[in-house]
Length: 234
Image (cartoon, rainbow, N blue to C red; front, top):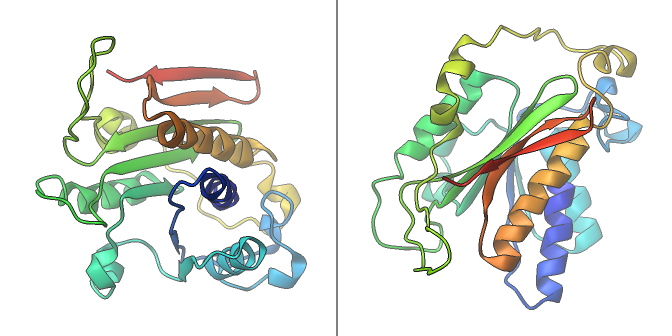
């Protein structure tokens, strides 16, 4: 996802749009099981994932993005300037508990008023299993939309923790045991599910930035059957 954002940033600058300033939160380190499924090198094994990725992006694209080697949670945000606020949040987490925690943090910004450069506006969540996944875009509070004679503007898109609350709460517990090898990891996640989902999710954001309008707020993806089902804005 980070590589897709970097490509998007480069394209936006080429079109004279403001670019992206990204901060990556991740407390995990690179393991041998990450090699191949994700773009990590053997020399990066043992390094914090956020640092390895952000350093690479900054060197390649000349950006000045930041890495935080901690989870995005209440404890971490307490020590960050402006409490880690941003216009857009993107989560790629493994478990429902992490989504609910992020949702509880972002819910605090719904009642905010006025506007500042770091006003929270959108949350996009990506999640997947072995060969299926989904992307869902939400608004943080009600966002005023321009009038339209052709469409019915929608200014409030519920969080993923609200739209799929029951499903998340009743989801079967997954195996948290770390994979010791790439072969073992591939029994849990297909080789291309992460990258396919990330590219399609980035395409959704690109359409929002480039065209200023979305007819769909996300999609379900089945990579095994090569099927995608869009989720309409409603």
